[in-house]
Image (cartoon, rainbow, N blue to C red):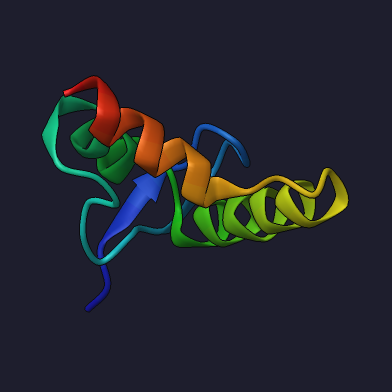
Length: 68
């Protein structure tokens, strides 16, 4: 039996994520209120944004590491 959540995006009961996408409270909030379908839609949209805007996500991670 799959776990269902009331999805914030689609406003109906849908299959939930199998695990929290991030550690910590924000990941838990997403896990409990975002459906697997909505999360998949977001990751596809995120990929489109990165490609269309020619963003280099490696710079995001290296600048975070430099700040620590």
